[in-house]
Image (tube, rainbow, N blue to C red; front, side, top):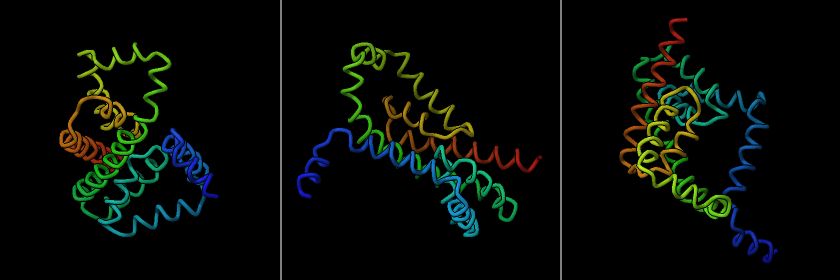
Length: 187
């Protein structure tokens, strides 16, 4: 038993593997009635539910149900407050994703990128065009109703400071959530 634990601790790609396995499991279970009921029950928590839905709004697998719950919360509560609180929740969710990507995943996959075209990728990451293009593309993705992981990844490999990321993430997610609420109200 100790040998397998030691082997796991020393394995290079444990965080990347954990991410992939958790995404596969979540994708498999996300469409079950049990998970859907949990997500909709969170919506019954009022503004605290809006915060949690904001956190779930940033993920590929939970963006759709979170958007629906936020829409219904905006019908029952003040829509601007729902968007504001959900925006704060989405910043929290984005920050968790950013830290996980920067601190663990990027470090694990860096040797793979260096092995398969490292000089090309290193050159690309240091060009001045990438310096402004990556955060701009990341911001567009975060502002859109699409899940934030790719946008966070682009911002994570750029030189954006954490405080800039947090302000940008809040502003973009708040506006994105507000847009979805307005769009849904108009239909």
